[in-house]
Amino acid sequence: MSGTIIRPYGDTTGDGMVQLSFTLPVPHDKRAEGAALQLARKMGLDPALIVHTKAMGPDFTFFVVYGSVHHLVNLDDVHVVEREYPLLTAKEANAAIKRTLRRPLVVVGACIGTDAHTVGIDAILNIKGFAGEKGLESYSEITVVNLGAQVLVPELVARAKEEKADAVLVSQVVTQKDAHIHNTMQMSAAFREASPAGTVPILVAGGPRFEEGSEAPLGIDRIFGRGTTPSEVASYLVHEMTTRKAGRT
Image 1 (tube, rainbow, N blue to C red):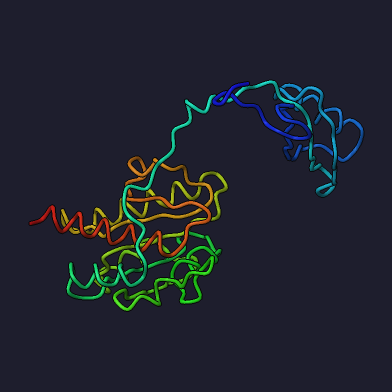
Image 2: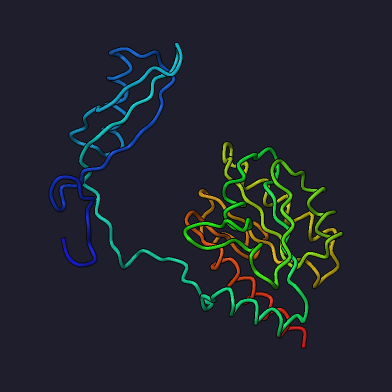
């Protein structure tokens, strides 16, 4: 091991110990445990130890497996998306909006599709905020319209048009069968179809399963993952708004 070549850490440095969980479609018995260990070994855990099992109904079993992997990670090959804009305070963001737009920035937010998990969108928009920061509702130069959960894409597009939204924020927590991907692509396509060229709002998606850097194939402008704070979103909106305005002048 060197400064850039690393292995997972469990009990001692470089021991390669990892823990993973999964469910198998078999009843909870010894045969299920054998199947879980076989899967773990095929995934590279050797030795592997089952530390927890639980029946999930009559036909499924949930496992937690602990074991050592021999894979190495080269940190030089890890590429991350760096924030390319400054992080602003609420006062700085308000001043920038007032200076650039000369009116409040209108933000419409929602959980689209069948997603009913509003914790993420509320953390960014509601005045109570997240991680010690107040949400966008507390910004004097931002008008927030929070549509809540299970909003259909046509409803979102219509309301954003009615409110003359500068930005649209959607939260997606439900990810079964890549629902977050399909919903976001449907949303971006609908806005582009309904908006004249150059008038599409800033489109932002947030959720724990979005992959950073995948904005282009989704047709949106920005992705935010878990742990995002209101100031990060506000700072991005100011940056993008300023960039767009400069491009039109």
